[in-house]
Image 1 (cartoon, rainbow, N blue to C red):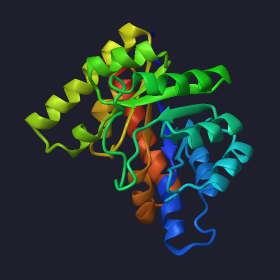
Image 2 (cartoon, rainbow, N blue to C red):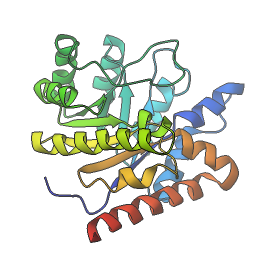
Image 3 (tube, one colour):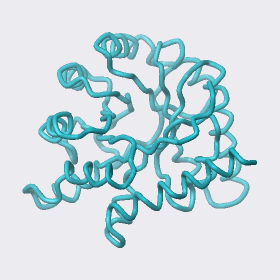
Image 4 (cartoon, helix red, strand yellow):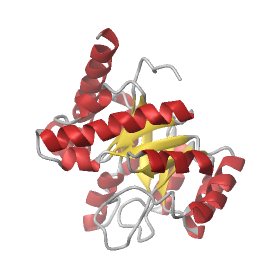
Length: 251
Protein backbone atom coordinates (compact mmCIF):
# COMPACT_ATOMS: atom_id res chain seq x y z
CA UNK A 1 0.00 0.00 0.00
CA UNK A 2 1.72 3.19 -1.10
CA UNK A 3 1.78 6.28 1.04
CA UNK A 4 -1.01 8.69 0.26
CA UNK A 5 0.61 12.03 -0.60
CA UNK A 6 -2.15 13.84 1.28
CA UNK A 7 -3.21 12.70 4.71
CA UNK A 8 -7.00 13.01 4.99
CA UNK A 9 -8.61 14.98 7.81
CA UNK A 10 -11.97 13.84 9.13
CA UNK A 11 -13.60 16.48 11.32
CA UNK A 12 -15.81 15.19 14.11
CA UNK A 13 -18.71 17.57 14.77
CA UNK A 14 -20.17 15.82 17.85
CA UNK A 15 -19.35 18.61 20.24
CA UNK A 16 -21.01 21.29 18.19
CA UNK A 17 -24.13 19.26 19.00
CA UNK A 18 -23.05 19.02 22.66
CA UNK A 19 -23.10 22.83 22.89
CA UNK A 20 -26.47 23.00 21.13
CA UNK A 21 -27.98 20.39 23.43
CA UNK A 22 -26.77 22.21 26.54
CA UNK A 23 -29.63 24.66 26.03
CA UNK A 24 -31.89 22.83 23.60
CA UNK A 25 -33.05 24.43 20.39
CA UNK A 26 -31.25 24.43 17.07
CA UNK A 27 -28.09 26.49 17.64
CA UNK A 28 -25.24 25.91 16.96
CA UNK A 29 -26.15 23.69 14.01
CA UNK A 30 -23.88 20.65 13.36
CA UNK A 31 -24.80 20.73 9.66
CA UNK A 32 -23.48 24.28 9.39
CA UNK A 33 -20.31 23.09 11.14
CA UNK A 34 -19.95 20.30 8.56
CA UNK A 35 -20.23 22.78 5.71
CA UNK A 36 -17.67 25.11 7.32
CA UNK A 37 -15.35 22.13 7.81
CA UNK A 38 -15.61 21.35 4.10
CA UNK A 39 -14.75 24.94 3.23
CA UNK A 40 -11.75 24.83 5.59
CA UNK A 41 -10.17 21.76 3.99
CA UNK A 42 -11.71 18.76 5.74
CA UNK A 43 -11.87 15.58 3.66
CA UNK A 44 -14.74 13.99 5.58
CA UNK A 45 -17.18 14.47 8.45
CA UNK A 46 -17.41 12.17 11.46
CA UNK A 47 -20.43 11.99 13.76
CA UNK A 48 -21.12 9.57 16.62
CA UNK A 49 -24.77 8.69 17.16
CA UNK A 50 -24.71 7.47 20.74
CA UNK A 51 -27.30 5.27 22.36
CA UNK A 52 -28.30 8.08 24.73
CA UNK A 53 -28.24 10.76 21.97
CA UNK A 54 -26.17 13.04 24.20
CA UNK A 55 -24.92 15.08 21.24
CA UNK A 56 -25.65 13.98 17.65
CA UNK A 57 -29.30 13.08 17.04
CA UNK A 58 -31.11 10.96 14.46
CA UNK A 59 -32.24 14.15 12.71
CA UNK A 60 -28.62 15.32 12.50
CA UNK A 61 -27.64 12.09 10.75
CA UNK A 62 -30.53 12.41 8.31
CA UNK A 63 -29.58 16.00 7.44
CA UNK A 64 -25.87 15.20 7.14
CA UNK A 65 -26.59 12.32 4.75
CA UNK A 66 -28.86 14.50 2.65
CA UNK A 67 -27.04 17.82 2.63
CA UNK A 68 -23.25 17.47 2.78
CA UNK A 69 -20.96 16.69 -0.13
CA UNK A 70 -18.16 15.18 1.94
CA UNK A 71 -18.10 11.50 2.92
CA UNK A 72 -19.89 10.85 6.24
CA UNK A 73 -18.22 8.54 8.74
CA UNK A 74 -20.87 7.32 11.23
CA UNK A 75 -19.36 6.26 14.53
CA UNK A 76 -21.63 3.69 16.16
CA UNK A 77 -21.78 0.97 18.75
CA UNK A 78 -22.38 -2.58 17.55
CA UNK A 79 -26.06 -2.68 18.55
CA UNK A 80 -29.12 -3.75 16.59
CA UNK A 81 -30.56 -0.22 16.81
CA UNK A 82 -27.45 1.40 15.35
CA UNK A 83 -27.11 -1.26 12.67
CA UNK A 84 -30.66 -0.60 11.51
CA UNK A 85 -29.95 3.15 11.31
CA UNK A 86 -26.73 2.60 9.38
CA UNK A 87 -28.39 0.21 6.93
CA UNK A 88 -31.17 2.72 6.36
CA UNK A 89 -28.93 5.74 5.73
CA UNK A 90 -25.95 3.95 4.15
CA UNK A 91 -23.24 6.48 5.11
CA UNK A 92 -19.92 6.36 3.28
CA UNK A 93 -18.33 4.64 6.28
CA UNK A 94 -19.25 3.23 9.67
CA UNK A 95 -16.68 3.11 12.46
CA UNK A 96 -17.59 0.59 15.14
CA UNK A 97 -16.60 1.86 18.57
CA UNK A 98 -17.05 0.63 22.14
CA UNK A 99 -19.66 2.52 24.09
CA UNK A 100 -20.56 2.62 27.78
CA UNK A 101 -23.43 4.81 28.87
CA UNK A 102 -21.52 6.28 31.83
CA UNK A 103 -18.37 7.31 29.93
CA UNK A 104 -17.76 10.93 28.96
CA UNK A 105 -16.00 9.95 25.74
CA UNK A 106 -14.77 6.76 24.09
CA UNK A 107 -12.24 5.37 26.53
CA UNK A 108 -10.45 2.73 24.51
CA UNK A 109 -10.52 0.42 21.55
CA UNK A 110 -13.00 -2.30 20.69
CA UNK A 111 -12.36 -5.76 22.08
CA UNK A 112 -12.06 -7.21 18.58
CA UNK A 113 -10.44 -10.40 19.89
CA UNK A 114 -13.07 -11.28 22.51
CA UNK A 115 -16.07 -10.04 20.52
CA UNK A 116 -15.30 -11.70 17.17
CA UNK A 117 -18.58 -13.63 16.98
CA UNK A 118 -20.62 -10.59 18.01
CA UNK A 119 -18.95 -8.16 15.60
CA UNK A 120 -18.73 -10.41 12.53
CA UNK A 121 -22.43 -10.21 11.49
CA UNK A 122 -22.49 -6.41 11.94
CA UNK A 123 -19.45 -6.01 9.70
CA UNK A 124 -20.82 -8.38 7.07
CA UNK A 125 -24.21 -6.65 6.88
CA UNK A 126 -22.64 -3.20 6.55
CA UNK A 127 -20.20 -4.31 3.88
CA UNK A 128 -23.02 -6.00 1.97
CA UNK A 129 -24.77 -2.63 1.43
CA UNK A 130 -21.59 -0.82 0.42
CA UNK A 131 -20.67 0.84 3.73
CA UNK A 132 -16.92 0.91 4.44
CA UNK A 133 -16.38 -0.57 7.88
CA UNK A 134 -13.72 0.73 10.24
CA UNK A 135 -12.89 -0.74 13.64
CA UNK A 136 -11.67 1.58 16.41
CA UNK A 137 -8.94 -0.43 18.11
CA UNK A 138 -5.93 -0.19 20.37
CA UNK A 139 -2.60 0.05 18.52
CA UNK A 140 -1.44 -3.52 19.01
CA UNK A 141 -0.70 -6.48 16.77
CA UNK A 142 -3.28 -8.83 18.26
CA UNK A 143 -6.10 -6.34 17.71
CA UNK A 144 -4.98 -5.71 14.12
CA UNK A 145 -4.84 -9.43 13.35
CA UNK A 146 -8.33 -9.81 14.79
CA UNK A 147 -9.62 -6.89 12.70
CA UNK A 148 -8.22 -8.53 9.58
CA UNK A 149 -9.87 -11.83 10.50
CA UNK A 150 -13.20 -10.02 10.91
CA UNK A 151 -13.01 -8.78 7.32
CA UNK A 152 -13.02 -5.05 8.06
CA UNK A 153 -11.11 -3.09 5.39
CA UNK A 154 -10.21 -0.18 7.70
CA UNK A 155 -8.93 0.25 11.26
CA UNK A 156 -8.69 3.42 13.32
CA UNK A 157 -5.96 3.40 15.96
CA UNK A 158 -6.85 4.88 19.35
CA UNK A 159 -4.34 7.70 20.01
CA UNK A 160 -5.65 8.60 23.47
CA UNK A 161 -2.82 7.03 25.49
CA UNK A 162 -0.25 8.87 23.36
CA UNK A 163 -2.04 12.21 23.66
CA UNK A 164 -2.60 11.83 27.41
CA UNK A 165 0.98 10.77 28.18
CA UNK A 166 3.33 13.41 29.57
CA UNK A 167 6.06 14.60 27.22
CA UNK A 168 9.14 12.43 27.29
CA UNK A 169 9.71 8.70 27.57
CA UNK A 170 6.09 7.65 28.14
CA UNK A 171 4.82 9.61 25.17
CA UNK A 172 7.62 8.17 23.03
CA UNK A 173 6.59 4.64 24.04
CA UNK A 174 2.96 5.30 23.13
CA UNK A 175 3.96 6.90 19.84
CA UNK A 176 6.07 3.88 18.89
CA UNK A 177 3.05 1.64 19.55
CA UNK A 178 1.05 3.68 17.03
CA UNK A 179 3.82 3.70 14.43
CA UNK A 180 4.41 -0.05 14.76
CA UNK A 181 0.68 -0.77 14.58
CA UNK A 182 0.30 1.35 11.44
CA UNK A 183 3.18 -0.52 9.80
CA UNK A 184 1.63 -3.87 10.75
CA UNK A 185 -1.74 -2.77 9.37
CA UNK A 186 0.01 -2.03 6.08
CA UNK A 187 1.44 -5.56 5.92
CA UNK A 188 -2.08 -6.93 6.47
CA UNK A 189 -3.54 -4.81 3.68
CA UNK A 190 -5.66 -2.77 6.08
CA UNK A 191 -6.24 0.94 5.51
CA UNK A 192 -5.11 2.61 8.71
CA UNK A 193 -6.59 5.74 10.33
CA UNK A 194 -5.95 7.25 13.76
CA UNK A 195 -7.68 9.54 16.21
CA UNK A 196 -8.77 10.53 19.71
CA UNK A 197 -7.39 13.44 21.69
CA UNK A 198 -5.15 14.89 18.96
CA UNK A 199 -4.23 18.58 19.32
CA UNK A 200 -1.89 21.03 17.62
CA UNK A 201 0.81 19.89 20.07
CA UNK A 202 0.46 16.15 19.40
CA UNK A 203 -0.64 15.86 15.77
CA UNK A 204 2.60 16.31 13.82
CA UNK A 205 4.45 13.12 14.86
CA UNK A 206 1.33 11.07 14.15
CA UNK A 207 0.69 12.83 10.84
CA UNK A 208 4.23 11.96 9.75
CA UNK A 209 3.62 8.20 10.10
CA UNK A 210 3.65 7.14 6.44
CA UNK A 211 1.18 4.25 6.76
CA UNK A 212 -1.65 6.42 8.07
CA UNK A 213 -4.26 7.53 5.56
CA UNK A 214 -6.61 9.62 7.75
CA UNK A 215 -6.83 11.38 11.09
CA UNK A 216 -10.17 12.00 12.80
CA UNK A 217 -10.18 15.00 15.11
CA UNK A 218 -13.10 16.75 16.80
CA UNK A 219 -13.18 17.91 20.40
CA UNK A 220 -10.01 19.98 20.20
CA UNK A 221 -11.11 21.71 16.99
CA UNK A 222 -14.50 22.65 18.45
CA UNK A 223 -12.82 23.93 21.61
CA UNK A 224 -10.25 25.95 19.67
CA UNK A 225 -13.06 27.39 17.55
CA UNK A 226 -14.31 29.28 20.61
CA UNK A 227 -11.14 31.36 20.42
CA UNK A 228 -10.29 31.55 16.72
CA UNK A 229 -13.36 30.35 14.80
CA UNK A 230 -14.14 26.91 13.41
CA UNK A 231 -12.65 27.38 9.95
CA UNK A 232 -9.44 28.85 11.37
CA UNK A 233 -9.03 25.97 13.85
CA UNK A 234 -9.42 23.42 11.05
CA UNK A 235 -7.12 25.27 8.65
CA UNK A 236 -4.34 25.31 11.24
CA UNK A 237 -4.76 21.56 11.89
CA UNK A 238 -4.75 20.95 8.14
CA UNK A 239 -1.55 23.04 7.83
CA UNK A 240 0.23 21.11 10.59
CA UNK A 241 -0.78 17.76 9.10
CA UNK A 242 0.37 18.75 5.61
CA UNK A 243 3.65 20.13 6.97
CA UNK A 244 4.34 16.92 8.88
CA UNK A 245 3.49 14.69 5.92
CA UNK A 246 5.57 16.79 3.54
CA UNK A 247 8.53 16.63 5.91
CA UNK A 248 8.20 12.86 6.24
CA UNK A 249 8.13 12.52 2.45
CA UNK A 250 11.22 14.67 2.03
CA UNK A 251 13.19 13.00 4.82
